[in-house]
Length: 282
Ligand code: PAF
Image (cartoon, rainbow, N blue to C red):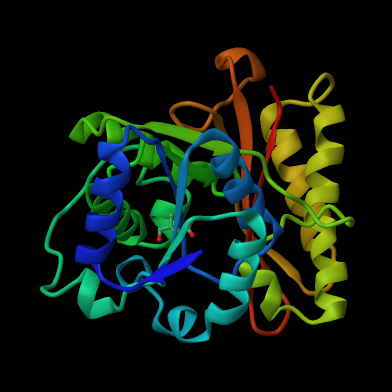
């Protein structure tokens, strides 16, 4: 696997592969890679001739400077994992390489980017669209792979792909969980062992709530999940929204939408690590 740091070099390599008729898979990441990322890379390696994994901690999607400062950085271990998974290139540019000038582009895809994470983290999805659109322009991938853990992010990126007419396929990949059920996330590295155990209650409550939808209303299930998680010392729900799985708009009754998803963000431990998860009700 080759590590590339500049856009020019990346483009030169990929235009050679394209001229040979080879397909290109892109896996965008911010580093601190774990089994969840590895599953995306393996899927891309299986689907495509060439796999590019970008490792770029994108500053424009962080509305909280402390969150950016404490985000884990593990480039060497990341590259070891990518080699094991069979990636062709790791693309690890500097901030100056990606943003030689401030990116003033504005992306707006309401309600998809204004609810939930969009409401809690103003500007977050604008930053995600800035970097993902740049990565799409640099790599012109055949397919791009995203983890379903960030359910809302995929919905926003799909809107951007339609809006800007990128000719590529978005491939959503299932959440990878620890044995306890906790969704794998780079942020889990910031949790102590006991916080990890506590955090497992998030998925437990979500999973158990699936069995309640035949006898409880949407708002009753909502309140039940929030109460269960908040009852655990060290956990505090920031929001839990039960939404139409396509539009991400809140629903009031179970038969209002064909696909229904519960999206949650929970603060965990003294450092208030934000953990995101979701459950598909139907
Ligand atoms: O999901 C992430 O890790 C990031 O939001 C992404 C898609 C790599 C853009 O920086």
